[in-house]
Amino acid sequence: MRAAGPAAGCVAAAAVLAASAGPALAASPLEGRYSDPFHPGCQRVVSVGAGRVTGADGTGSDGACRPGEQVKEWSLAATFAKDGLSMKVDFSPKGGPKDVTGKWNGKDGITFPDGNTWTKLESTSLDVGAYPSKDARSTDLGKGGWSVDRLTKRMGGFY
Image (cartoon, rainbow, N blue to C red; front, side, top):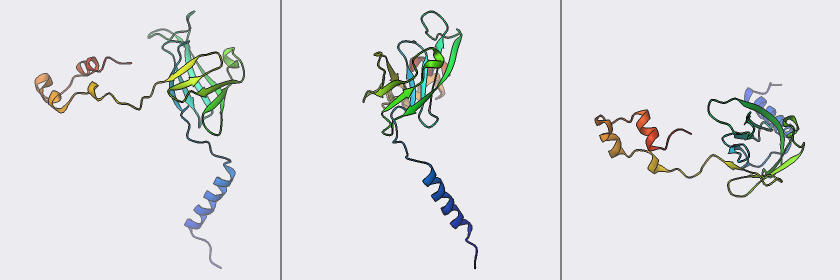
């Protein structure tokens, strides 16, 4: 009797892993970075694969995040619907409710029962006008290069 080769072992291992992985989630529009209008300047990150929502809140009375000021970072457990269009987040470590449902609004964000909507920061449309054309690159600074200061001013500054 001959032993199976390495390829047969890989196929068997893949079959075992696929059977034990459980049902797969659909690709989720929830995945990504968001802004929160209740905490201006503070980002939220939704990670479907990790089952987490992370972020930071400003330590001031308005909860806003400002450059140079301290923030309080947090990471919360979240579960996601199989269709990838909603999630339940446990806000209790931050002093909030345990099971808050956030739903994809079908356009650009996640809406929560209190009326708050986190707006997705990633954009599918690229503003190509913000980048220098080949002609502009060849004449700028007289040597065809763009300085960091010049480029950031043209693009509206760093975010």
